[in-house]
Length: 444
Image 1 (cartoon, helix red, strand yellow):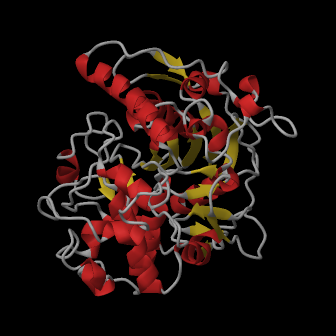
Image 2: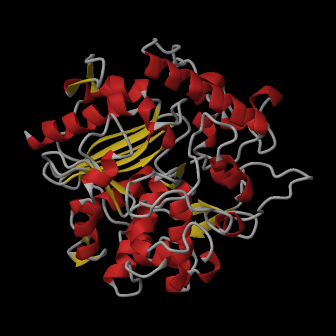
């Protein structure tokens, strides 16, 4: 989802870039070369350097170029300076330790073959080619690799994009395990306002697993897709003085109409995460930021507060507005890998973690046609590989990832600013690289 604010020219630029790449991929034509990562880094181009920065190096909310590569190398690590946010408190306790391993991994020694092309590469090359802002690899709870680029530092939060959805899905699974949420209940039990919409005859479970038939396009290459209407309603696009459409997430969600049967097929649509976030607020009587703080952030020993982007009435974006540090993202991934346990205590209900790791219906997922994800499924807003390691993922556009490999006792978290929004820009390199890293660590 476009989890950052854009103006019309920025939308056009992103759509054009995405269209050129996807068209070339589907036609077999070699896509246009991507920008050189080193030459377009924050450091090389000097974005927002100086007091004040030179006019041609400023990135501001009212300039749409701030949300187009290469400026996104800075923007994705500075969301709070540009837009309103809601804080996620880390709590009063000490941070969970992330000890360094006695023997770090050399990323140049971890090799893999790119999906599709079969090109032989190493993990270090993947990091550069996929515009990595930060990478952290844990093996058995110890840091074996940690790198930062772009504008990211260990203390600075980065926009998680749709990795946010997996946090929302985990919160739903937690409330189910704790008896506060009934997944078999109709959506209208919690949201009577959604009667007469696409969700009027849907269940909470169908929302959690994204098997909703709703007229909503997530096609970033189409400037008329509903994803942009959603972005305007949530304040991610300027509404303009003559705008007469929905002005908040809530108002937009109530306009959605049914398209197809519920429960039949997986269909990735950000609005499902926003509906689920609304359900969670009603079920818990808490804001999403408060709920995340109480149920996850304080329990995993986060080191820094996180924060959400919010709309004009302070409603957090559950579809892609969460910002966290890379190290705290790793702490969450490690808690999930350990079945929800942190320091010997059950921080996240074991039943919730087990349900996510088992995955969903592969047949329903297959209908979505993800050529690079054969045999995968989707459960509680997590992507489940069903590979021989039982790995599962949280995924966000432009390259955001949590990769959990239970068999290899490995967690990989990554923040990035790839010029291409769609995961197809990253997956051919990142998916085999993550698996190769986990396999290499398991062989130690």
